[in-house]
Image 1 (cartoon, rainbow, N blue to C red):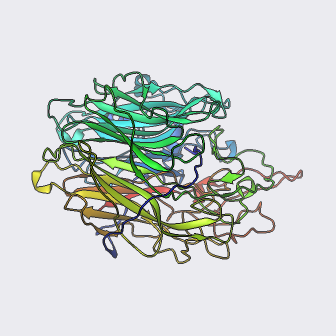
Image 2 (image 1 turned 180 degrees about the vertical axis):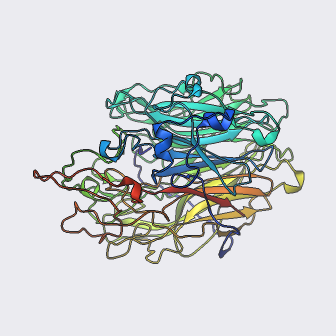
Length: 625
């Protein structure tokens, strides 16, 4: 979701670390979102029951060449042949045809592999507005859109998909702001069928159904399950999220748990206490089944806190938590610019579904920049990105029973003048972004780091994730990390956004990179994962006016087997936006293929060829080191 509160910058320390190689991982990248290839999208009902079903949304998803971002992935701890993925999936938005416009749902994807990630079957989690399958009655979902997917497995073949959701199916401007968890169970016949049969969706917390995000809106989800079978909290499911209160300001972290395999959840309660602005929670379950919930605070001026990582701890299976404790201060790397909106061309219909989902930035500040109402003073085109933490623990490591691990992307090296209104360290100030690692003893509070995982001199490193599950004692100490890396950006400069050249054109600039450590993060070996460097700055959103890359990548592992997923633009068709007359600063390098006509009043049609590749944003995955 495109929701955030912009913070100012605080101080931190930096420590450098280890080296890298440049070749991509063995094997080709695999597309999880088969929205232009046979067999297209398959109903969850067909996957789970073996019985045919389709509808207008699934048919559209099978040909859409649409947009997908914010991917999640989870390897089955009982069988690494089984991998589940998800994303914000826009494949169904033209489910009534291009002439009718983008009126269909943005929903939660369900992507399934039974061959260790060599191929995937694409589907949607049941409950989307067009769903009339027998599974629809099992879903409590009440909204027209869902996203921010997160996935967890328990020890008995159940998979849990967490999500935030929004938008009124009746088409009003209300943003419901619910969060829910969908559950999948083994369909019978061995572990290859783990997480295959949909068993229902439970609402964890409801928003206040206010228009334009002005009420209570729940967002930024995280989920984890206890699967170490030590007898303490076995198969509990834990869920946390950020609660935004638009009328009153401020953000809190809320937590809920399920002790009956996701059928019901406890009433959520606030764990961030009095901290004013917090986001990006992530849950780690340690080898003794303690819980650590890590999140970020912002130097917003609404409270005394700066840009810091905090954590809270539960020793009773999530029944209660400690007060927040500062884990690490840092210098943020939050892309921002000065908003300088220009008149938007009149259109007879929109190119995106109706939504009250908007950025909530400080007045005059933009977190992403593009054309028309999304234009910025600098003239750059860029996607939003902000410093955020991800946390994990090895649930089977009883020798270090209270240890957890954290990665985050923050500024590294000197802060310089950017020479424009663009900055990552406040207006007109920029620096390189790197991935930092922390190893934390939750019992004593002692920590190792922060250290930079891959101290590359060129490029920004953003959107990190980390995984550490090692039921095989021979793999103890193995950690896997993933991130986006712009070292192959031919126009790289700390003074400019990723993929932006000094003449304001954009170029392919991002790859997925990953690293592995065999000694609990003391040292790392990193390598390129993606086979193709892609351009993240294509203007595919807000009526083809601004880029959007989501908020995260994902990696999941069991012992030495690790699989990562990322958002990718290799299939996007570049083009010319006919509404730009004259052509603007990016010289069509950020524009996508689109077809429009103009009537006698001067109003433009919507995009009449959305299936032709201009919005073909996909989720790719591959084995990671």
